[in-house]
Length: 174
Image 1 (tube, helix red, strand yellow):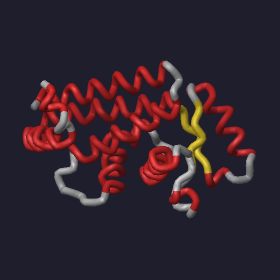
Image 2 (cartoon, one colour; image 1 turned 120 degrees about the vertical axis):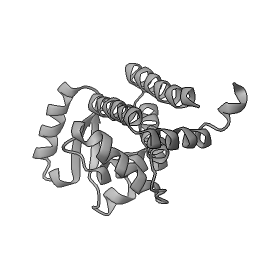
Image 3 (cartoon, rainbow, N blue to C red; image 1 turned 180 degrees about the horizontal axis):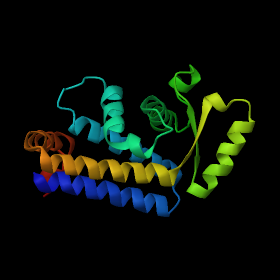
Image 4 (cartoon, rainbow, N blue to C red; image 1 turned 180 degrees about the vertical axis):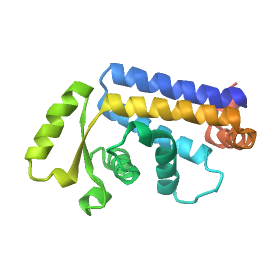
């Protein structure tokens, strides 16, 4: 079971790196947001029933330090837009409850994107975000999560047990 959790984490990192390097933005974002969803579920010892809360708790706890201008609600809204509509627009952003992301590939492009947003008159609706910063924030978050697992045997056991439910089909292939 330990290998399944480690393998899941390393496979997600490999997939994100491959998609990022090939500049496949939608598949990258889909895997990125799905990874947070799954890690939110695996790590949720409180058995939160609402996936949006699990997602936001994981983001706040493990990723926010590397995404200081991004609120977990904004990230959840972006996740919903990408996974449900293949669009940066979500129900939350349409209702004004989350900012919409304007993605760029590299950190260097971020400055130009942010400048355009600031001059648009709608700066309160948008956030410039590079795929590089998203990728780095998730790597950072996964690293923090793994370090916490090593320090907390109870959480480690809980996550080991939960990973089986996420990777159920794979258990029959091994």
